[in-house]
Image 1 (cartoon, rainbow, N blue to C red):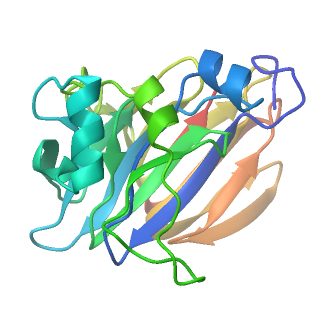
Image 2: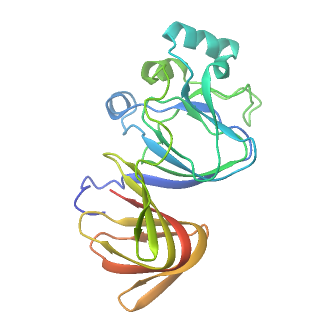
Image 3: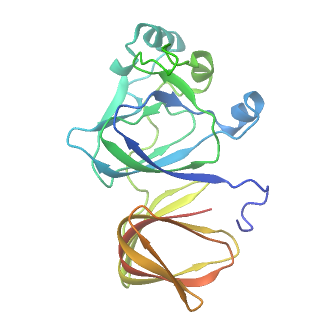
Length: 249
């Protein structure tokens, strides 16, 4: 994992989420609440929109500030989505979901998600859907209201950095926090990189194909593939025409 993380638990989860239907409205606690109540870390995450159908949208925070009492009432009467901040999305959009931000992925959206390695999720609203047992899926209203920021999102959507050209590679800093750093790499030829002793490199291929060349060997990859390069690997090259998300600590 590298010297930036030493507690023995792998620090991040990296996912592709393909939402055919709207996913439940959720919120995640921060580390302090999650450790105290759930015995595991909180969850801060980032979304990169890989693809989206026309008209697709997601929920990102609230339109305005709410009291706890109003939020509880709207959860109970099914009107919570009336005050959520609905954002139309397209491929290439970026959202940083701080712990405490109420959020939901809408139908017709494929995202790459980088998050803290935690399973703590509080479901706030689920459109009245039933679980496999024929009963409404459980909500976690009190815990959600304990941790939710009942206000518009503090961060604007979009990457935090501008595209930087380096030879055949354009690199854009998507997100950087105490838990992970994510960059978008657009490679049209070859891109030399280095996995030093501080952090592993995780590569998730979003489009195209190529190969990771290191130590005289080559590992091919294509759209949807994920590659893990351990900390201390040293110099390597990405060759091909491809777009990838590079995650490090």
